[in-house]
Length: 70
Image (tube, rainbow, N blue to C red; front, side):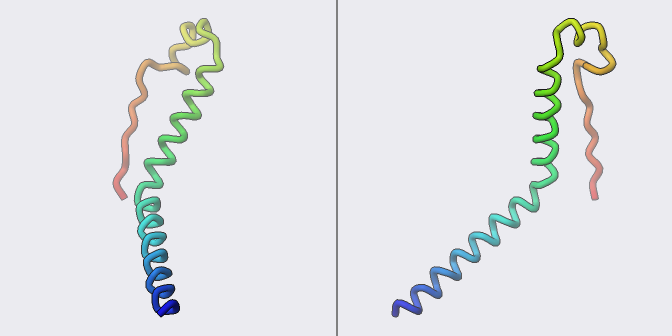
């Protein structure tokens, strides 16, 4: 009975890990863009306010992102 219970439990664990991996794989592109945006924001926060105000080309008010469907 212990062996049978262990096999059922291991099967459940493998199914959950597989499901989690599928979710991560499905959302990996969005996660990468989110992390890139956070890094860009952090890098821009290091710059001085005067540098941001004088160079509007490097520091636009809005960033437009277009997604391409695969």
